[in-house]
Length: 169
Image 1: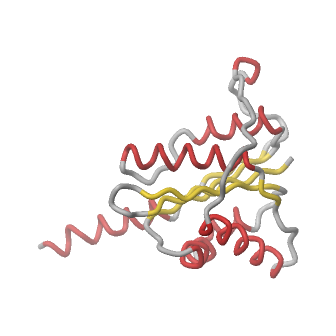
Image 2: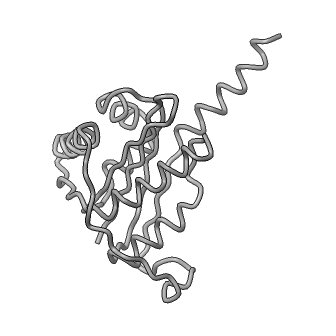
């Protein structure tokens, strides 16, 4: 009886983890960009795991003949805010993606935005491998982007939350 209960839950958890967000539009979003006032934050101190994730993503892109992505600290700050949000609600989620997208469009002039998130991977290699093995996450990693940001934050239980945002300018 327990097995039949856990199988649907396991499937739903896997499906939840494997989703990713991206939009690609030259027109922007339907939200009122003029009312949003985003300040570009160019200060960010990268941890070793964040640098390793960024390097592994660029290595993967280069292996596919794609351009490497340039880190922008503001994107990492937006990623960090999302990690902190997920930790505060104890859930992995793409909720409020439209707000992050609007921030990057308004503050940096992004014309396309994508997002990969993950939770509870212990190493940079393990999270990047998981993204490569997920069609939606891999599509973001190999997408027509020019810049990216990465944040990894640890909750009180020692579990890591990853947010990786991609943009094209």
